[in-house]
Every structure is written in structure tokens, then in C-alpha cells.
Image 1: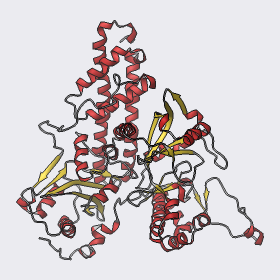
Image 2: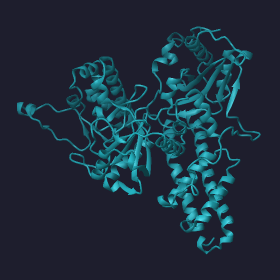
Image 3: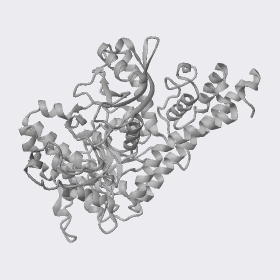
Image 4: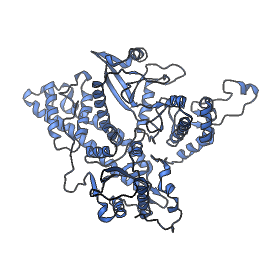
Length: 603
């Protein structure tokens, strides 16, 4: 087709429809790939092919941007998209809305439309007529009504067949090809845990269990996700399935409270792979058992991070219109690479890369951005904070503290510009706000210090297992979440552990070496010396006591070398996004002691 500018106005409606259809075709291709990835994840899980699952998760994160670029190229080649005038853009949006009326992922399709427009149009050209500032299509009560389609969730009625039979049927209905080691034993464990959690369940007329129709895959686990309804009780029912010895499967535990679910779906874990025909229905279901969790965060945890990013920005704009406090510099020690600021009434921090970095930092903006991309696609194992990356974020100047404005103008002038009453930040990372660990330790009780240090050591050890060397391990670079977990969030110095050379400090040659403030041995660019970390980690006596009590091995090269050796041998780290003390094999060891041990049946 010839360039758009050569078409008469009479054809604008037809051209608008064709462009809208091209954009929707691009989204449909993306979502097909998204669901196919979850289908492949099931096969990899059954085969225990963890390397393939890792690759699949990384590839899926990148696929959205690839489909957007593909669609932009098609529009530019076919329609000379940059020359489309205002009237045609309005027609495109109206036709697109019409195409979405019976669509099962309309909210995600609207976000895809916005992504394509942002690649074609200049920021100042965006307005409500051209993009979806607000959703145009309702996502309530969308169902997959194709004759052979599976519903969003299935309802089970334990009052009819009994709770044990119902729980067993819930598991077997997923038709995993790998056999279970002892499903009856595992079902007994679920029932025993339910008894300990809720007491004796007196069935009410509405006693039922709802279970989402697709398994949730992540790392080395598959998760059955459901909810229990009985009278006024509405509780989650989440069952992780894992591989055990002998090439078989077992139910690892059961989560029956909201708090562990918030960790399971937290921003510090990698995204699930889930086959969802109607994602909004999955989000609505999950919000019934996690009502405090924002919709955008749930979309993100389900792998629809662009939709989560879109909803977050809408939440930010809504919050700004209903609040009056100022953006201020975030509390804590100022970083050398980032300007970090926050809005006290909004639980997030905003991070802008400075134009230049003082010594001893030896990095560039491009290298810092590459580190953040690495983390985005890496297995985070619950210890790396996810980030939302935005371009051209406009904030009202009146809502910015004067000291913060001066800091931005002084340290990152290339990243800002004024546009009317707004300050536009060209590139910004946004993360969930946490309490900096150094402040947590400084102001905490003895019990809190012990908890913080125990979590810090666990976090670093988890990162090593995930092939991440944090680089700068000062407490200020770690945060404490609302759930008390310690998470790393400063990425400008991270490296793959496998790229590092873990060394022991050589013996001093003489007394002068021991008294010297400089190392008496050569240090390569990738050399790390765990024995030296105590110098800057153990200054506080309370911290030292807790550290040596829980992580005395932290300063021994052997710990780090062993983690690196396992990775070099191809081992994939395991991850339990829940307290391992609640695993059935730990909680009820007598049932796993020997094969001929009689199962304790729970009525």
C-alpha cells in the first residue's frame, strides 16, 4: 500500500480499520506466544528440564518488545505511520475499540496499542483521542465461552464425596504425566494442616473449593491455586508440586493464609508462567484471597508485566490527583550512581541515573542500564527487587521539593526537561519502597537486629545460588520488605558469580604487610575476598553477635567457592518461596520416615 499521505480523506475510515486490525493482529500473536510458553513450561516441568525452563522464562520477558517492534515495522512499511494525521488516529482507536468488544484480553490489547503508539508518536502528541489513558472495555465477567474451552476455575464440593477424595481429584484433574510418589500421604498432610489451621471444619451449605484451571509454573515448582469457601470463611488453598527422588512428584506443602501468598506473588520473585485465556478473571480470582495486593502487581507476577506497568502508572496519576504531599529525597545514605526520591504517601521509590559518577565508581550509564536488564530477566529467587522502567515521566513541578529539584538539575540535567507546569524525566526506574537495612539495623531492637542479619546472610547466599554476586554488599544496598524479608536493590555493581574469582587472602609476608592499609597482594578486576568483608559488616557489636551466630561461614572462601562450583557444574538453584519449615517432609517427618510407615488418616 502506498504512503498514507497519498490517500484521500474518504479512505481514512478504511485505513483506520486496517491499521487497527494490524495492531490487534500483532497483539494476538504476542498473546499466543505468551500462552504457548506456559504450555511448554508444563512439558519442561514434567521432564524436570530446569535449564529449559530458565531459558523459556527469559525469552518470554523479551518477546513483548519484539512483537511491538514487529508491529511498528509493519505499520511503517505498509502505511507510512508517522504521516498519519489526527483524524485517522482517532479512527484507528475507534476501530480498535470495536474489535475488542468480544476480545478475551481487551485490557492487555489496549496496553499493546499504547506501546505501539509510543514508538510512533512523540510524547507531546499523546492525548486521550489517540491512546488508552483509561480502559475503554470492561473486563468484568469475561469468560471463555468456546465449547471445548476450560473455564477460569472449577468448583468442587467436598460435602458430596468427602474432603480427601475431593483434594485427590483436584490434583489428578491436572493430568500430569509424571506419577506421584504417594498422593494419599500428601492429601493426608493437607488435611492435617487444615485441621491445625482452621480446627474441625463444620461443613456449611456453601462448602466448596474453587481451583484455577491452569497450573502456575516457576523455578522447580508447579502450583495449584484455589480458595476454600465455607460459610463466612474465604481462605486461599495453594499447593506446590515438586519433583522428588525416583523421578516422581509430591505435594510439598499447602498455603492456607494470605500472608505467605503475598510472598509467593511478591515483586522479588520471578514471574509465573500460566496459560490464561482470560487474564482479568485470574486477577479477579487472586484478589479475593489477596485483597490488599494491587491489580497491577498481580498482572506483573503472572508475567503480564507491561499490563502491570500500565496499571501502576494509572494508579500513580490517580494518587497524585488525590494527594498533596511532595516528592522528596528518599531517606538513607545518598548513592553515587542514582538519585533516589519518593512520595511519602505512595509506597514506591523513583531512581534516576546521574550524568556522572564520582570516584571510585568506574561505570557508565549504558553499563548500569545493562545491569537492570540483567536483573529483569534473571531468576530473582525472592531476593532481587523487580523494577518498572519508564521513559518520559511527567511530574508536576509544584509537587517536587525544591531540594530535590536542585539535586536533579545539578546531578542529572540531561535526564530532565521542563514542559509547562511539569518536569519530564526522560528515564526512571520505579521500585517498591523498603526500609533500608542499615536504618533497620541502626534503629532496631536486639531481636530485629538478629532477624535482619539472619535475613541478610540468607539473601546473599540465595543470590550466590542464583549466580549473582552483589558487588557492593553494604547494608544500605539492601531493604526490608513489609513481610520482613531482606531484598537487594542496588544493581550497578552486580556480576555473575561464575565470572568472579573467589580467593583466600594470602598470608602476610612480614609485619609491615599486616600493618599496611593497602593489600600486599595483587587484586584482579574480578577477584573477590570474602575474608575481608567483616571489616565493613561487623562494626556494630549487636550485628557482629548476630552475624557470627547465624552466618559464621559467610567470611570463608569455601562457601563462595562451593556455590560457584555448583553453578559451573550446571546445577540450577532450587527456590522455596515459603518457609521450608512448613514443607510436609519437615512438618510431618514421621510420614516420610520409611515406605512402610502407616499413613495417619484424618477424618
